Image 1 (cartoon, rainbow over the protein chains, first blue to last red):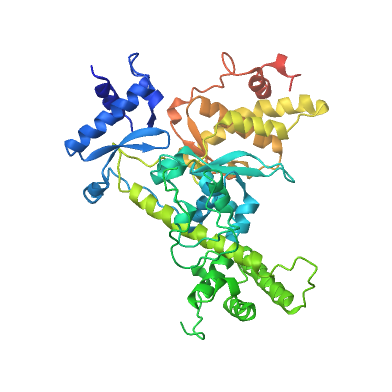
Image 2: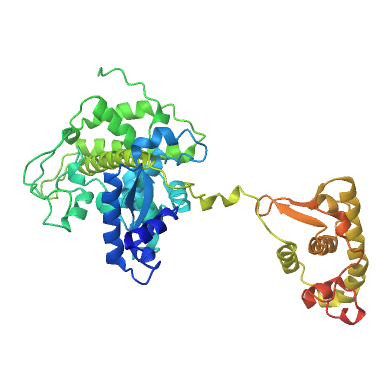
Length: 213
Length: 268
């Protein structure tokens, strides 16, 4: 039995993402590297044979999913329920948490300008965020972060798939807290001074680094 | 955009920052040089009709209104040059830009979500949110209910003998009461069974009767949510074995409270 066949069998039989190490448990001959290698082989195979599905990386796991261009056919079946969409406030709150995690409720509410307790509870119930710790501050408030389920819900393989702040049309160059996040990586795009960039997409201007950091 | 056209439906906005941003962007105002007096007036005008029924929501807009008015006041005051003379609007501008950024990210997340929604897995089923606890029937059993009841009704040492006698009669009686009731209707509210009596002991005994009948699979218990009304539902009246089964299973407590055997009386 070829490794790729075993991996294919395991992936086929699962309706949730599986980590490479989990797949490797199928057989003693497998390990994480071999599983990942097998997945590459399968991907090539599927592409070449024009399968209607692909192996997607969601969070830390792999899952066989149909290609998006088949959605219109599949949506006609009751057996394929439409996944529920998140509300505007939920998306806003998730955006804040995704970029600023770990973050407490008060901070989120300051950024959004509205109370967020209800939204936070909903997101927690849906397993999209979770408590990741407590702040050292007064009352030691809870801090929230995103979950694996968050990545799966949006089809991300990691937080790196989130849009990077400098790609966004609006950005405050010197004080944006979102940018601090970036500065952890390569020196950061810290154009000095208060250079308001408004309305239009910013291009050029000393941004050698690109998406795949 | 014409200046005078400022019909604003508040419901459309996520909050005060959203509204403020809308006012600014709609009029092509330079966000780094907000005409604070104009914007404050417009903001106040927009929230004039705000419904008092949703105080939390209204409060958030009023808080922003207060912030705007404070900034407006600070702009009028002469600023001493020694102090750090940051523009009073600076923090607001930062917040607005950050919020705008968040809104943009939320929009991107939304398209990512839509795109992800176009891919299906084998036998795809969206996991049920675990947070709907309040809406789903609460599974409970008579043991738990009794445990709760017993915490309330701590037996007074002096009243022991008396209660045992009451219990001895009451338990059989209450079982009969439930059976008789359920012969007529398929389900009954626990409270109704208690209606004729005020004594809490009747409540405890009715609970115990229910416990016994549940154990014998004669009835089932339902409660839609915590602390809501208990319903006793007919399951299989034929399953009633005609006697209370004290022995063989269950804890000493149940037997003791039931008071079937005289040697247990002093326990209760």
